[in-house]
Image (cartoon, helix red, strand yellow):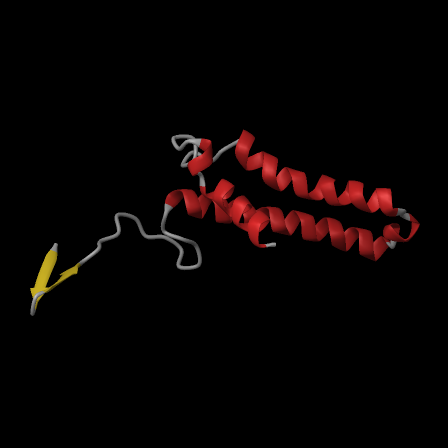
Length: 108
């Protein structure tokens, strides 16, 4: 519905579903952010385990590179190969996760 006040229109937006205030209301963005949140717990746990066990002390540069690729590639590949139900109906290049990856690549 709209309301007119002195030449300006105020549009009242109604939400069809309630959502968590911490996550975006857009479905594709929300599913991407949920994936990033859960994957962050995984990679931070991997780093914590390596630091606590001091496993990293025996690594050379190649082991650091392999670990870095191994921990980062799933974050990119998983949402592309296994899109959320919201992303399945969207072309791959219009998905929030792809745009987020491009943003990070450009400005990092």
